[in-house]
Figure 1 (cartoon, helix red, strand yellow):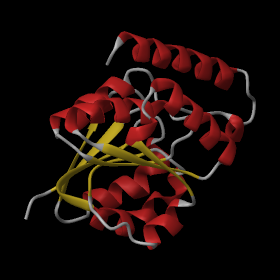
Figure 2: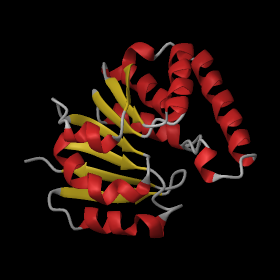
Figure 3: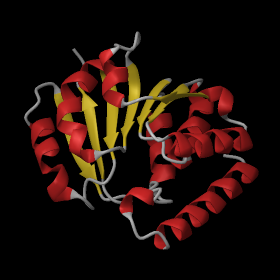
Length: 196
């Protein structure tokens, strides 16, 4: 990552953390990933040479920028889904400011509707950071969209362990996947879709 882009990400992280500290209602917070989660996602994406990348939950685009920057090394492209139009607009401006808008397709739609429409190609890498109450229902639709050998990363696995327990139990009971929780940021659940 070049110094200009890294400086932008550092500034966004500080600005959004300040915003969230001064907003009383959770629904008005941006709740982006932590600053140490971004490099971790970038490392995973590059290590797996992921080219087709799906992000569920754009918010202001902070995590999207980490994914899109890493995708430059793999020749990849990020599709990111968001349902809040105001946040999508903030994200769009951030993508342009970082010079990464050509690597990102932004979708403003409920994830359930988008998944039901059936994306044409499988994804190498999926980052899930949205409304956690929907994860159990999403899983049967999402897993077929991950190519064999692909990786799903789920945020907040430690910070919201009890809330995510039904989902993590479902993942552990799913044949053909291997998973591990990594204590980076708020806890990242890595789910690898086995080959064959």
